[in-house]
Image (cartoon, rainbow, N blue to C red; front, side, top):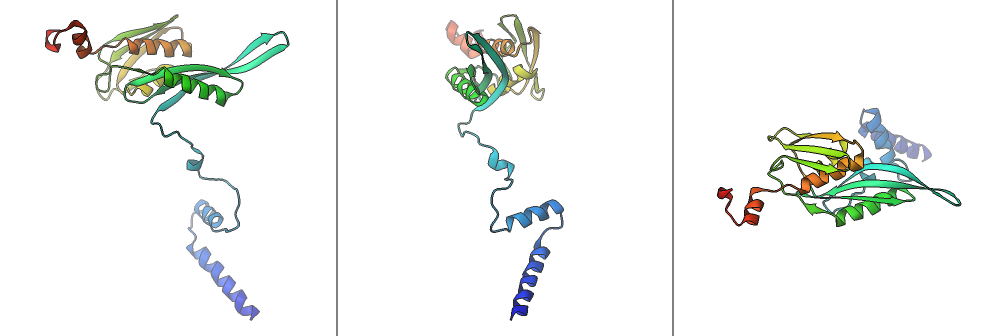
Length: 209
């Protein structure tokens, strides 16, 4: 009787090995998934990604460590600069400080959501050339033909991608500080005006402009 049971166990193991894939990595995953008593272990990367289902594009531009000197010593905190947009013409920027990096990013995201403004676009680009200024930072933004792509640096690119601009040419002058670049880009985008907007302000038709 015992011999019969041993034969059945060997047959089951042989069937499992035959069903297992030949690739070593796939074979290892197959073996781990068929363990009924398996606990913990490495999970799929998709299970680790937790995204908010609000349809917003959130980009962390920079994280700096700041130190405040007080009577009792030094207090270290973290400052986060975040850009939030919907990819359809709305964008906002936020800055916040906290004792931990995740808390600073979360506070900055909330402030950026509250500060979101609508940017006037022309299809996948901007309606006209503009220069954004903030402090010593200047960002020149020029319209581009479809298929050009986003020609911009890191901080400027984050703002443009969050807005939803796909074709644009930019050039940054002066300060290359991420805060100055982001705010200069934000100010330049807010100054954009379409023909329809200008015609409405002047009380004329679009053809008369």
